[in-house]
Image (cartoon, rainbow over the protein chains, first blue to last red):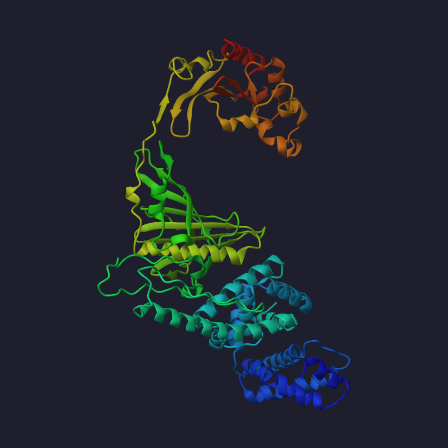
Length: 185
Length: 451
């Protein structure tokens, strides 16, 4: 079933929309959540919440790419849960390592707290669009999907070391980009 | 901003980029498997008797072009042809590497960001008599890394020698089929150890490549351009590599740069013999201090030397200097803060751009350009207004007077200042004056050049 057809089911308020979404997108969304939270059970709860959120937002939303829509909702919920757990000093998953790597992009400096999230998102998007396709793909698999480097290496037919070096290079580029945009000193 | 905010900022990533990141993965697996199969088939065809061609490097496997959304992997380097018993071979002959077959996954360059380091001052100490010669085609060929084949071209090179004729270093300009337009890599080779390009608080990261150890540097400039540098000692030869890349060429420039480093790493096993590079001739060099009388008697430039000293001025220094680049006679006379510099050289092609007619006053008339000159002189005239050259036959008193200007700097000479040059046949007289009357200078030039 196409994304458009499933979105139409949401608009018709047919519960088949939920079943179809689960069948088509459940695996990738659960995997993304599991990478963030380190727990399949938590990932399952996240995806269920994501489906509920989709049900409540479509309509009026009419996403053209339902996979990306659900992924982003799932990821957002997983990050929220991660933040809550971090406060309680619980949890695992890839996120601690991912955050440590991304901290390099900030170079030890900090920008004003008043920085709008949308502005940062735009900046990062522009940066990603400027990257060669492979570099962008590897970067997103690591920092959006929180996939381990070994898994990314298998996906792209690279060595794990090459993936790590590639990520290091892109982080350096991102740091330069953020500096150039004046978002970090 | 903190690391978590940065992570959350990825929520806004384009859906299209997300889709591509999922598709790219599966595509690479498919093409990697296909490349592996083709390599096995090729290797089998080459090793089975009757199928193997006669002693030629095997052709690279052809990887079909990937669909539009995918980037196919680079095919691996073709292995050396195994020897067939009874057939004469050159066991150490390197296999040429076609340019499209350099596998970037064979090494993982890590660049040290020079923002955190200090650029070391590697300027060589003054070496009187130092000279240079362009390298011959044979010399350039001897410097090509073994196995580079057509993957690298050394366009030209220059050897730099000390005044005694000892090789100091060789500079090469290299390009490759994958090079960006107008982007050339400079390679500096030397038998003598060099100071590191940059100094850091901690040891920089070293990257291994085919048995070579490189330290790579990357400088990101404010205008978006990029300077890539690398250094390493390969087979006892100190090597420095540089590529100046224009803005927005970062990824392609790095690929080009790393390609060259990969090829030059072959020096580790088979370094070039820099001692074989010797000068064809050692240019004459001298640097003599002369008296005024000796200067006037100089057989090359003496006839154009300042014949008499302005009243009250004393000789500061008179020098006759010659090396590969310069051949001149120059004198300096002073009177307190006033001074007169008089230098004679041969007129060269490079001086043509500054020759002006007396009629073109905008090229030399200082009354047209108030100080600061950087703001008043048009950019296209800056070179000629800075140091115009008059023809001796055309020179007039008015032109010399227009050239002079006055300043009132407290504590300094209040006299007129001027600088210009005069072409007398094949020679050029360069004059710099402070506190010397233009009329006096004109009268000296008239008597010298018109006789």
